[in-house]
Length: 259
Image (cartoon, rainbow, N blue to C red):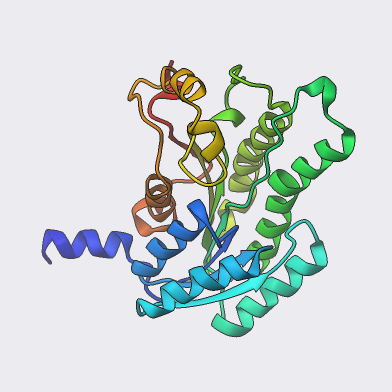
């Protein structure tokens, strides 16, 4: 077997079924396209069904298999129904990427409890709901990747964002807890901690020369991430190349956490 064949086998997802939350745009959209290129069938879950449909159509036009599902991932009933539809369409579920997220850049003393709970519901509680629903259906083992953040492993300090810190920090340790609990089921659970990623989500922040300068100074590599950088990490953690990797948080951060 050639070295190229070995590499292809390590990263092949042929015959696998993957679900990505927040799959209609940014990191989710690009991760879905990359997992499809590796051979997986995709289910893109998003509150914005139009965006999810566009992303799914892009995959199918390029020869892949993908469906789009509208779902509020903070609703247990909607999550259960969405995952059942995926199973009906593709059979077994092998890969879950908990990517959907919400941020409120509000000082702690100005944040309402309603806003706090909203961030927790999307970033942490929904990841728990989706992970449990996926694990029930991962009858041949599987991989769960949580898209956390460098803010889940540091105190930041450039601008106030305590609710995001708390939710992503919870997601980091949820990753470890589920990795330990589900290891005997053959389910690997990992997380990615990206730096600031160029998306519509961060456009206003990164387009501000003063703010972007402050942020770039925090990273030894001196550059922001692209969605493809995070998508590549998702592919690695979802593949056989990471078959003994679980409970790990992979920083995709330009060296931010090394300082």
